[in-house]
Length: 96
Image (cartoon, rainbow, N blue to C red; front, side, top):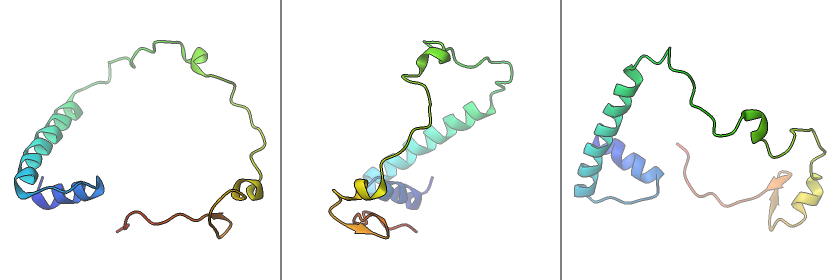
């Protein structure tokens, strides 16, 4: 992990780091990524899936049924701004 990548991750997380914090985080992230590499190297072909607390057939709150959705005009009626037949929201980050 490079300091440049650490600063990029910090920017994506909307946090600012000084040089010392970036160095510490660089080491932490290196250790985390190394641990993930160890886990990725394990052979899990014979490991059964994790047990569910509740059987999957009982875990749904309701049946997954197709129902009509809210009419677009009705949904947009309460919007403060509408643009191109959708909600207009302010940009909050630059996408590279």
